[in-house]
Amino acid sequence: MHEKCMSFLTLAAGRRTEERKIRGMKKPAIEGGTPVRETKIYYGHQYIDDADIQAVVDVLKSDNLTCGPKIGELEEKLCQLTGARYAVVCSNGTAALHMAAMAAGVGAGDEVITTPITFAASANCALYCGGRPVFADIDPETYNIDPEKVEAAITERTKAVVAVDYTGQSVELDRLSEICRKHGLILIEDGAHVIGTTYKGRANGSISDMTTFSFHPVKTVTGGEGGAVLTNDETLYKKLLLYRAHGITREEAQMEHEADGSWYYEQVELGYNYRMTDIQAALLISQLDKLPLFKQRRKEIVARYNEAFDRLPMLFVQKEIPESDTTRHLYILRIVPERLTIDRKQFFEALAAENVCCNVHYIPTYYFPYYEKLGYKKGLCPNAEKLYEEMLSLPLYYAMTDADVESVIEAVTKIALYYEKK
Ligand SMILES: Cc1ncc(COP(=O)(O)O)c(C=O)c1O
Image (cartoon, rainbow, N blue to C red; front, side, top):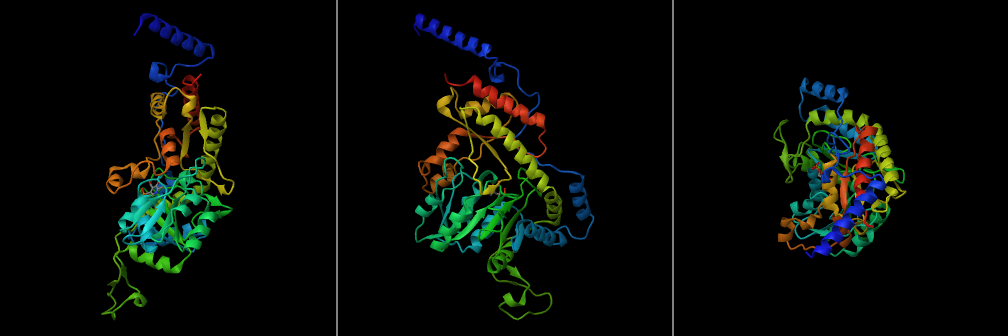
């Protein structure tokens, strides 16, 4: 480089450093400064108390580790919580989606519309049934699937819509239900993030044809692993029960042959072993007792983050719809790249150096090599692709202390201001 040019750049960099000092800015840890936090904080963590431990121990001391009384108890509790008529608990949220897709009748060549901003299972459930996922773009501000894009994607092959309550905020259930009714489609709500949320005063889980939950440890309540499908429809419920247990029934009304004896059962469908253990169910029953507390704390943290980040023009705060009283599972920090000298990856790494360890939810599903090989190409959903370039998930969980929350805010603010484009 020309010498004069070099000295100009050095001068300019020196001036920028001076300016930052004047504005009281601290040097990011990634550039040799002191990290905001001494210890690392991660984006999610379960909360287990003595009551949870005791509930698990009690099952371990009982006669039934699986297929015991805790399963029905948990199902009843989920119905009470949501107002759904039926709940079928199962081994995880992926199994719940698979069972829901089967119950919806998804088969070879059928299309299932879903969002690309989700965990792969939301689309994979269509593939498990021989169907084809069709991706509809998201709303650029709420990040949930855009109902109008869903309607535009419907063909005569469409069988179902898998709508994900991304981050725990409800999808627009009124509009989606109306579209599904009009076109004779089954609405499956992938509610892996949504437990504790209400839409227009009704709990998510009681509104769609079927709603699936996941109880993975980063979710609001956990069973270690676990899932559930909720529905108000008795026919769907009976199918779900069969799919959970190999397609096997002991109910005479469902049998095709006469019973040989009291031991007799029949396999009448192709099902799976998607059962939940009583150990998981007991843990979940105990966790659900704390849901109001979990909800309240998550809401407090989200409100505090929103208040802090709303003031910074280089950050965009996820839009909240008034219909959804949200128990937030994920907090998405979105950068405004035009206002920063660094990109999302650099922002992510700068936060990690401050000991704030984030994640990214999610890589658009059709970016994955498996989907590429099925013929999906980038460019399908521009809003989703843009969001993916600009987002990261901040720590959000019940046990975060106020000091934790403030340290995350401090780290984000430090990085955002230091790298603000002038
Ligand atoms: C939106 C979404 N759908 C489905 C799943 C699958 O749930 P599980 O991990 O319990 O199988 C997850 C969990 O990561 C999820 O976040």
